[in-house]
Image (cartoon, rainbow, N blue to C red; front, side, top):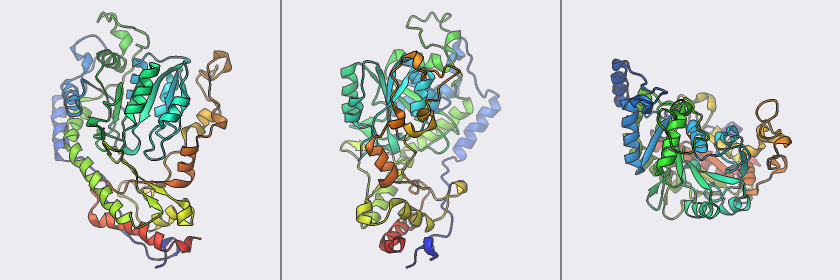
Length: 434
């Protein structure tokens, strides 16, 4: 059977369905808010409205109950939530924060906003989260925190990383943007570190268009996050704040009443949406097990996976063809997804370019004329990003990792069969690619 990349007939000729979790419930909730005329009720002053309107507070209450945490603080994005968390921990100029090189850029770059230094550790070759041994190697006396990312939906190694953090007196921020309802030993992602940050961006499991939620079981950190979210400097005096006021220079990271109303509806759908992702991945993996050079992702004992993406490992030696050529051939057999046509087939070689390869780090592009915090005059310990080589992430990105989104809710069994059959067809005819 001639491969489509060589002019043969494609496995699929119709677009894949859009991923749309918005329904009549969200529409009704939004209309109810619109009719009140109160689209946001936050005030940057020490009044009862400092904590937002009724829908925001209702959503926060539902979120903390669902995820079994003491505090849930809504924000306008996961990025804002990470900034709040860094500030709440008192991180500042010259401090070091250990970060993953294989994640969305803000998981590392947010550190720079407070003048701290991102220090990259390598990833685990099975879960793609931070590798514990690599983290331990880069801890110094200046290390103040670890930002552990639950990449693709698998929870980070909280048992060993948390133990390491406790040993050295440092904190853990869990970036669980891709992992709502993932868990380790019965504890939900988000509650595994000192602070957890969720994303409600439009392409996540559930969304409010833009938005995020910070969770923590620490009363002081929760209060600091709420202050930083909403113009902290304007209220610390009138509220008679007794804690450490450093880093309490606030922002407008507030969620609107409309977003919160949508979020309350979306949260109710989350269990079923995650269940469908898990079922779809299980079905695909059952089909793909016949392809010997494809290895399915590990789910560690005691863990559940939320599958934001479906990562697959490619063995080039067994395949006899380069990964990129193989993936191009699989994509040629498939079609685009409704609403995301300009992105092409939702399948990639690797994930993001390792972050330390970005020009930000290669050229040390800091802030202002003095290039804060990278200029040598600040006498901070700046890693040699230019010569940095983390072997696992480099190999994953260049040779072995395949990621795709074609397992999302809304995909029928026939849709999934088309995805599997595209992989199988190319595997069976890989000789055409040599």
